Length: 636
Image 1 (tube, rainbow, N blue to C red):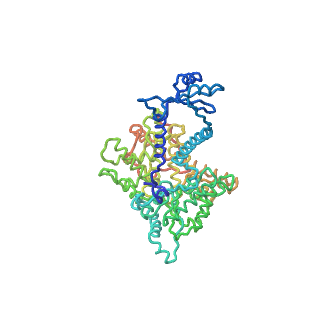
Image 2 (image 1 turned 90 degrees about the vertical axis):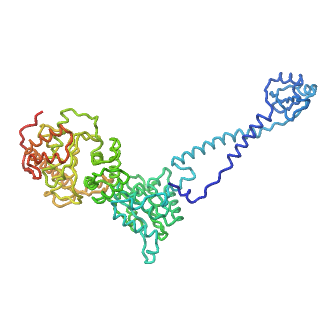
Image 3 (image 1 turned 60 degrees about the vertical axis):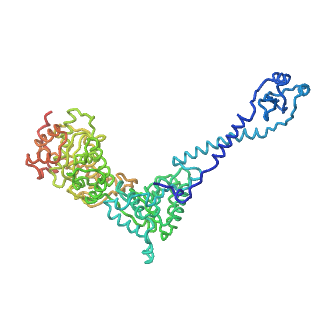
């Protein structure tokens, strides 16, 4: 259950009696209107005088603008307490009215009509009506998260306690180092005297850094669940509002709330939305975001860590954070929450499959090996997708085929069964994917081929060749990068050799190959002409594109040389790939024909075809100085 801070610390309000008062008042008004007050009959002036002459009206109230005549009907010879009928007519300038009334022995009651209350009510009723509409509208705005006018400066932080979160460190796997760092924070929250007696000062802020989906928010919730102290959860974007100054007011309110319930944990998710480096991407230096950031810096400086208030934040874009946030005394401890390794993936799979009925033959270690590079969120999605597939197929258990298909869905996208290719396109895709697979099999450092498919998937993929690493890798040699380029160029080379033409299908492969070649030439110092020099800096660590494009720090001549070396490298590797495929032309025909028949080849069947040809496990000839010399395209 999620409660706001105000709901946690205040006593529940008693039921208001205003509604009861209003109902009683309305009941009395209705009773007076329909039971006690006489029935009003509006008549003309002539008819009013006729009723007086006929003794139907016993008394007349003469006011400034109206005449009111009362009729009292006798019941059992007695006169009733209240009049039963009231006749009313506008007063006209008749000088004979008073003598006429005296002649007919009618009681005359003079009344000075007071219009003050009528005028007042004519103003108050519309104002009251519009006030009700305004209060209803502001309440609806508050329910939709926009906040009322009186609560604009209040913090939107949600507060959790141990019974609300329900997550502990036992629910987090694959991040042992990060959990160990947070264990120290947890120990300080439970027994701060252990540190303060030695003069130690706990870090004011802990910054969780890592790619999306690795479990940063989950770690923060586990810290709250383990500690049992109040836990403030807020996103960086919650501070930023349309009105200038509201973000800074919310920061002050958040820290005031935290100081009242210390010890506690403040967690700010997506810190980059609030803590972006000042002066970047803005026209002025005093916008709302910068004021909010300045207030956060000031609050962290003036906060006493001995009170037991720990600030935890998470981001996947640390390169754009303001340097003032990362200095000692603020977020002085940074914890990397990276993609899990093999053992970490296995532990995560065990957690996410605890509620899933797995078949006895499922080997989670095999699945963990095939999911290199997956984050915790990817693995959770994998387990859920496999369970959905098993339910869709009417199975009582989740088996290996469902887990394999779930991996394909995450990597290559959803299978498009309604996307039908014509025979020409299907043949081109088959030879394209065969080219990738054959080059991968002929390069010793390339990752092994796990599956080849010509079934369209995702948005634009007409086929794919899936390679899965056998182990986690953190460094890549020059040879490995070159052979990775070879595998990427294999599809384009097969099209050119077999059909004497090229298609747009190799666009993504060429883009990736060019990126690797550019990194080798301009970043990794792997080019003989330019030497061991770095010309470009990688700005973004966990995102695909850098948020800030740095200025180029080399001349136009150097840029031209870099482009030339990249082109030479790609052309040389393409020549070697063509030579390799020419030497295996017959085998390429066999594999492509099998793909056209079955549409999907697993690793075992692909290895069997290679073994029949006698080329499995041995590198094929081909180098950067050899040119392809195949004898014509494949038969139609």
